[in-house]
Image 1: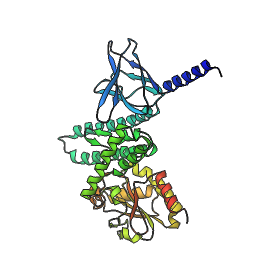
Image 2: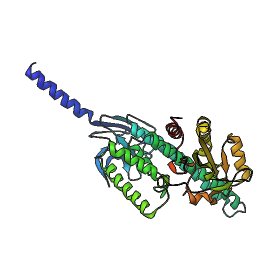
Image 3: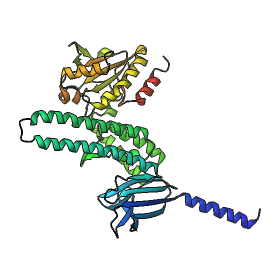
Image 4: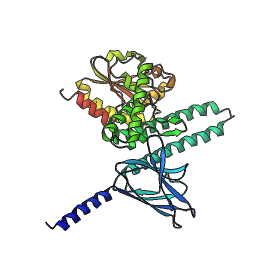
Length: 389
């Protein structure tokens, strides 16, 4: 082979390799402000560092090019209150179109799967926040009126349903993207300042799950290493305080529940010993619970004859609503109990329940073996447990 050709080939390979690590962001702002700058910040372990800036053209266009070695988080921003969080990977060419004053909700984005996933989540979160804000407006309308007490009861139920919905959506989002860095961002989303969707103690299982996955895939990425340290400290604190969380229930005997069924007969959780039991907390007013009920029915049909039972505890406020929910969703086949005391139910502190749906899978000896199993996760776990039966 010609020596010069060999050198040329090597150089071409090297150049091609460098190009594969380049990212390119082609953006366009709608209603741009003349002379406005846009910035690109990189997320380090404890800080954001501005790595580039560009003046937005009169027609709203801007361009960033940067060499990156691995998937990393960046912020595209005009100021500290107007930004878009992006997960960028080597070789990506991103197209973005957004209004100048709302980068966080781009009208169009392509070329970055991670950023697109976060954008999808942001839309769901924004919808939830908007619904909660509408409840606040309604509350203000009833303020200082005789109807305030009854309105508060209704608004509280609706708010709890919205919060349950976004909590369940976030957990499903993490489950479906457990090998992506977007799962790390989802853990810390808020519906209001200081009001997180996932609770580090109640939802510790998800923090541990994300940590375990990302530490294997991105062991040298500073935000992942920093998160790992936080999770270790969190687990240590929970263990030292002996706090009850879904993950700390695993391996221990499920606390006893003794509540009346629809006929008024008291049924103990321990009466189900000898079966694999799904202890499920729900309510007829909880829309995510109602959407999950068909999945429970499917699991019951497939595995009841093999030794599977469901012990479902309602947090309804009235017996009528509870029984209507059972009838409407065709749930009569398994065990139902409730003291119909809403969030004042005795089971709430007993199982550290902060949102529903919430469940615990219990083995034949009454010990918790897993928690928060829904959809395909529940079906897969049961298939594994009953595979030889």
